[in-house]
Image (cartoon, rainbow, N blue to C red; front, side):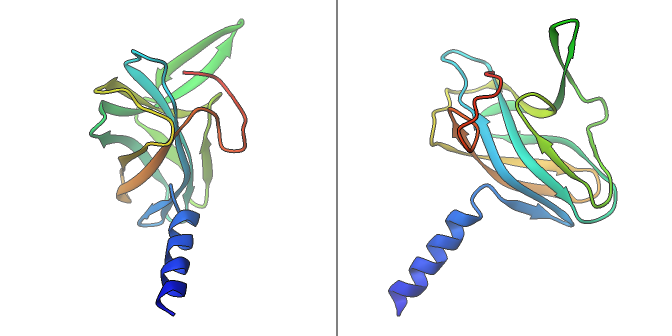
Length: 152
């Protein structure tokens, strides 16, 4: 019986890996693109569902980087541009936002060490109203489901 309970708990832990919540905010599918050797930045992605009042993802902290900043990516005239989202990433009430390789994402700036596929990185996301949400991000060579997307 104990083995059955332990197996059920382990299965549930795998199911919710990369998921976290804070006061109406749910973060799931969290992953970081494996950065190339010597890189000082990395890009992180997740799905953020807001089940509460309007809020803003302001920034984050992690021991592997100097800062974690929401960024937007846009294309203009065939040129990709990335820049920090001034004032954070807005989340309307009942909105789900997907941070993805070719859109809004989190930039880990000032990497303190190399990141390797399969590694788990804890990032504490800071929301203006909901507060802090510690999230387990998995480092991957490709997006979940095998899609490559943009390499950072």
